[in-house]
Image 1: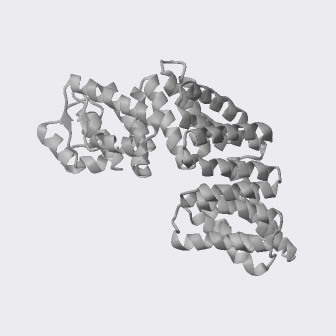
Image 2: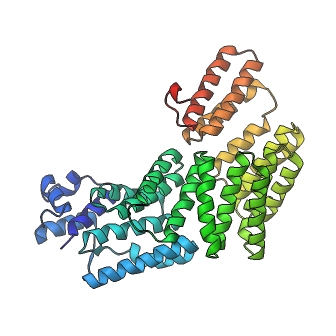
Length: 429
């Protein structure tokens, strides 16, 4: 069977093109719909005009080649998930990204693109490209089998997690969880899913579920000597245990991860583990030990984002102690670093450092600084920090007896808190 209609539909949706725009001057919209749903095959003239408008080339392959390509991509998909060698996978993926295969089996077409979806996520492909692929697959999913539905929901959950839409991400992953018993999955793939699910649970503060599914993943990774993934699980479990005040267990997991990373000379984990150990002691209000670990993290960090996070963590520890000189010193270091490396990705730290520079002043002249930062965090949907700084501004207004402004800002802070927890109605509290 010729599935050129599927290829046309996929390309059109990925290019954000409406059916009416593609069909204009070539055929009717209803006729294009029939082509895309494989209900009719267009004439050569109509087909060529549609392909030209989409700037779409394709390769017509045999059934044998189709099976071969799908098998090869499956092996790359497996390798990418287990090893996570982004650069190697990126290079191997190029030969698939630049070609459009005309599959004879419709189901193989869907599976092929679902594997590509996950590979794009692993190799940090431009997020708009991946979103367009997700959109196209979602519009075709009524023909998916249970495994394809599982892949679509898992991949969509991962993409939405990257896009910081944590609650919607978890809904997709829990849909996959419901499907997992309806078809066969290899153990490595189930483990990968449990690992992803645990991280999503962590982001939604479902901490017992986090520990349960991350522990399941950890056991497989340890048994199969997949050490990097095992370290990831130790860290996730440690974070969940820290938040639930199981500090001794959390430290044990971090130290196990630290020993494993040291034995295997995995230096990229040194800064991450020191950062999390710092957070562990910060939660126990052991400021000096927390700062010691944060300094250790700074000495191990090689990337700007990790460095800025640790500086911010140090500032917060000194803020708890109201050590103004140290706060100003570290805010200055952070702002100095941003002077030479300010990007959209790390711009939030500019606001954090500016705010903490005046955090303990109680000076009304800082009102505009707080407002600008609150607006920024609201715009970026970082409701946790919008809430935090709205409360601080409300306190500032109250300190200066501007009680109406204070009341309005407390109300705004409450709205941010609701947004942070995705609460719509008071009854949900």
